[in-house]
Amino acid sequence: MTRASIFDQLSSLADPTRGRLLLLLDRHELTVGELCAVLQLPQSTVSRHLKTLGDEGWVASRAEGTSRQYRIATPLDAPARRLWELVRDQTAKTPLAHHDADRLRATLAERKRKSQEFFSGAASQWDALRAELFGKRGEVSSLLGLLDETWTVGDLGCGTGPLSEALAPFVRRVVAVDASRAMLAAARKRLDGLPNVELRQGELEALPIRAHELDAALLFLVLHYTVDPARVLAEAARALAPGGRLLVVDMMPHDRDEYRQQMGHLWQGFDASQLESWLHAAGFHAVRYTPLTPDPSAKGPSLFAATARTAAVSHEPLAVSDGAHKPRSKRRRSQLTANG
Image (cartoon, rainbow, N blue to C red; front, side, top):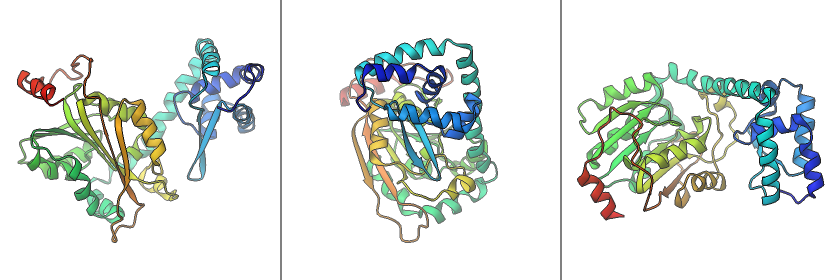
């Protein structure tokens, strides 16, 4: 945040509308259009308040295709953070803020609906479409960091199951998760006959996986479809055992805005600093972001592979999010502890 006097900071937060606006941006990145819809204010008013907050260092923005995404500036310095926490607590109690929260949920749900519309009829063509965009070499190269015969690996956002199929012969167990019933139906046909692959339906933001159930997790070309990537990464961290590994393969930043309309993309790639910030906030360390060599036959954007690990020791209880899943055996837990 840019340096400003306490009086300038007080002045910029004195307007109740700016408090409501910051309350929305404290947890989510939103466009001007989305802010107008949630606050039920004209664009000129929202833009004026954003400029004031931006001038005082409260708000930051980034280009995302033809639009701009706004968020609260981070990190705030200590005095500004204390001031904002005071204003935030008071603002959140107002009736207008409660109405804003209801409209925000509807706005985020609409984002998700647009992305899911693509999948409703794409399952049968998904493999060919993805191969045309990104080529086939990315799948092979991305697996090199995962293979260990004792591991339980999570294929998060498994789609039609090509990576689960590739992983199954080399690991103890694969837990394949996807929110789309159509994708899981296609995956079930592909994975029939592989006894160590378990398909589960669920959202990446609330995984149907117990805490510490996985030794490794993979997010392959799925993060750009998620509304809240930071929450997805935090869920992955929860599902990983102490010292567990995460591999994210996705697009590097690009300017192909047509993917939003044609394929339901919500993010136009991720750069190293953005992804590293989310991973560190989720509790990961040893983060590496590596651009992948482009496949000559691929027509889509360049890809990267990012790896990270959870802490070697955890004091969290082994919570169960789905009572239908059996807990790990004592022998398995002891092995994980011994391996650090």
